[in-house]
Image: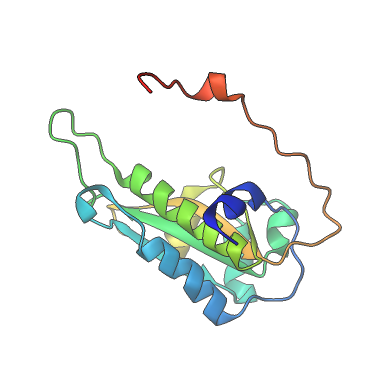
Length: 172
């Protein structure tokens, strides 16, 4: 699968088979994040991959959706605001941008490996922060359930705005 195919194929999976991905495949997904670009190459992140039923159960307290509990693995993407680059003229912290790039790399690599993911931002960060024992400068940015998609999930067609609504091209 090439990048264009992975982009077209990727979707938010909200129902997983119980079969756990291999450790090697999870490492491949995490490597995609590790290699992602970041502002001034600060790499202000840490990724936690959990597959134990105890940890998954505690993480589900931060996002109590039944489908989330079907994921055999959850990756937690954490930003370190003490390490991230801040733009000089206005102090804009680029940690969220950096993590977004890294998470996108993970979703595309997972798709290439035949794994499904879903980018979850609507969770109780205080629960995750406590569970992971995060420091003052650390912030959980996203939860990413990952595993093999359950074929019985009803998949909605992918809808996107039209090209004219999203980008403008001039001077070509």
